[in-house]
Length: 481
Image (cartoon, rainbow, N blue to C red):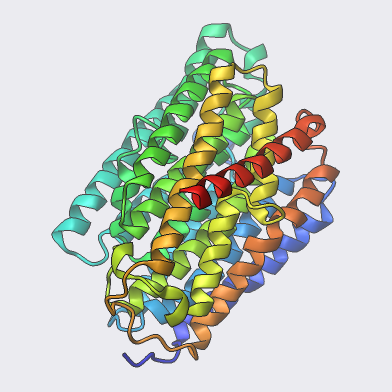
């Protein structure tokens, strides 16, 4: 298949996202110590009669998260020019993709209840349009499941706005001081509603059915959904508003996060559909972020959110290129000898999988080490720590199984038309691989400056030692059998 040159919409969108990334990355670097926060508030009180405002918050959390979203979106846009080159309406697809990214940026920068609803609804509408992009019955059913599941989360947030109406205010600052304004019961209700709404967006059980179904979308959309946008929106909301959630909400979130992460790992071990395996790995990693929040390690959860976005996006881009050149085949049993046919793609896919399982000194190692450390110091039970260890083993199992099948399984000629001279494919993959390799090391230095790791840093050595020991044990078991 002849690969067309990148067209004007892809070039304009990619360059705009790239320039915006440099702006927000500069803001995050300048505010690396977390000492400066800029709040621009649009007050609508005189127009509607209540304390209604839309605050734009630029601090380290928002600027760093937006810079990651824009960086990944720019790479995915360039990749879309390659992957969707055969589409007649590529410009329409790029417009939908940019609307999706804009909704996520609005959700990050406007952390008030009404501002969140604007970005939240934008994500819901654009995600539905992108999932049903191919307009067949499978895509339509998957889009309906995704839209209806997200509507449940929207209902919880609407009820939360109704709870906020008792204080005649909807601002972010009022949520922080809500405990001093009301009794325990209204605050508990608001915390439960925030938690349930975030769980639906992040596909935590019992709201996890929509995430594998969203794989019906084109691979560039899946890369954005599973790395830095839709499923991470719930984690970001809990990072911003988690102070309202009390001890009851934390225990509730911990229980369902553990169930989700174990269920996702056990399901991924038996699958052969490459995209669904990666989707379940996303479900597992997002649940780990929720677990870190439930034990009080909010900074660790945010760090893993940023790091996970890079190697998960790289994983989807690599799989997307394999699916493209194999004519749509997603079964790993029919994609053998990938190392010989697509060496660059296989090496980058291997790097992303090694980051996923926490291979020492890759990006995922630093954040997963801290999650294990937070479970050690979070006064949790031995059973919970056993489940966390089981999840690490399952992650190694399904990641290693997929790489093993792609490398050694019988070659049936599915990948037959690979062209290594595709500059757009190689550029997007190499840019994403840079983040997958170095984001953990760079991000850790920023987080230490902000003292994000103070509760768990004393035992992070033991978490890292546990990960290294897990690697040695699993390698011995694999070579023994």
